[in-house]
Amino acid sequence: MKPSVHPLRASIIGAGYALLVLVMVFPIYWLVLTSFKPGYLTQTNPPVFFTSKLTLTNYAQVFHDDSLRVFFLNSLTVALGTTFSAVSIGSLAAFSLSKSHLSYGLRHGILTWILLIRVFPPIVVGIPYFTLLQRVGLTDTRSGLLLTHLSLTIPFVVWLMLGFFQDLPEELDKAAMIDGCSMWRRFWQIGFPLVGPGVAVTAIFAFIISWNEYLFASILTSFNAKTLPVAIATFIGERRLEWGLMSAVGTFMLIVPVLFAFIGQRYIVQGLTFGAVKE
Image (cartoon, rainbow, N blue to C red; front, side, top):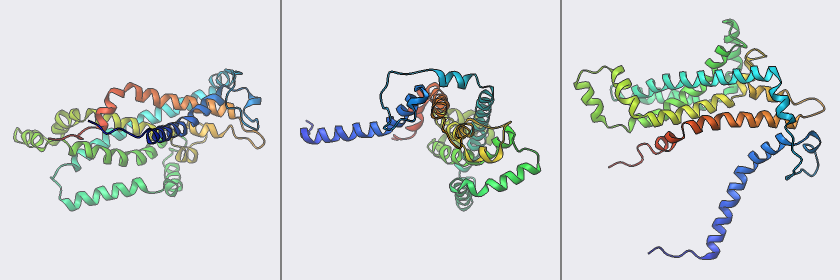
């Protein structure tokens, strides 16, 4: 029989959860509400938290802007390309590093180097990336931006996928080796299918990292490859902030990764709990 919880304690815990949910949800609510507000309500003091005077003017202006359509296509193309490339390359690296064919010292050194790349401040390499891409003619191109995003996502993918591959039973790999399977066949036919939920979760996170990236996109692009995060900054003028337009684009940016996660939702829980229970 479970011990009863004191009503006062239960009320405090419930109030704490409610406050936590409010803190997490309110920024999203404020973003969406502002995107539907008419211009004169976006800069009132005190701010208007509830209103029935809503309009679609901001969204109409956003969707009729041809340049924003180009920026959206740039963001989507770079994010999808980065996700596919990072998951493909990172999964191969993680599978190799999860095996004992390499010495412990070498594997530890490689993983430490990859981790240092991930935690390194991106601003430090912003100018070197710009100089390098300028010399090879890839500035303000989707390909150049994709390559820089890979430097952010591949280390993340390697470390995340490493845990999934390490949770696989070693007996499967040994049995495949006895049957004469090469490293590539063991990865493609055994390892990769078994960590499918983990791949889905990793792909979602990699997509979000690339989709929201601002620093490299602002340094390496001017117009042809400009992405939505950079485009939002153009609504900041010297005398006026276009809060409604910024919020409309921000809401649209929020919807895309949510839909991406919704499509793979049945894999998310499986991936996050993969290997959590072992006999």
